[in-house]
Length: 181
Ligand SMILES: [Zn+2]
Image (cartoon, rainbow, N blue to C red; front, side, top):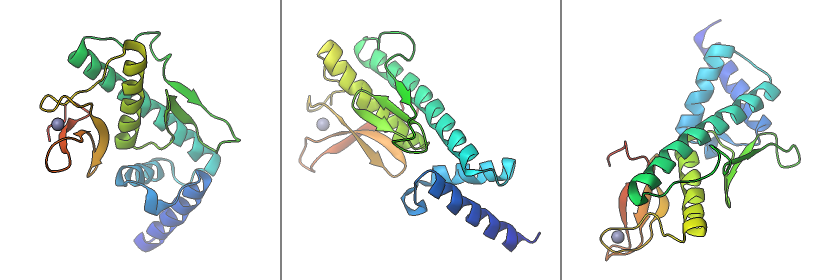
């Protein structure tokens, strides 16, 4: 098969898979599209049902990793633990009535797209809410202004942003401490 035919088959398959997960490609981050290419390279034209399973598995797996990163970050900043059984506060569910793929829910935050940046942002918001409800603590806080920080997105990185300051706010740091901005 020629290269053009292969590309056209891939794009065709990708369209079908995006319809299967109820998404449109113009709304998807590069990371997710790149992952779809890898899936296609490895497994070829899998069915929509199989793809929904992979999508869900990947979303759940990213959420577990994100939870670890954020939990460490809370511990470093506040000395407080996100208590409970390992993942008892992260709720995964899959209900055909709500869509073809699984949803990760933590407090009022939820995500159903296997995109690391979005998953990390959503899990951070859920943990932030938990820290407030459970410990009555604002986390994280801007050292300069003492304001609580908010999740924001800078290019393809999830960041903590402070809304205070003359420029209408400033980015404080990446959610993932291993990323230096
Ligand atoms: Zn600030």
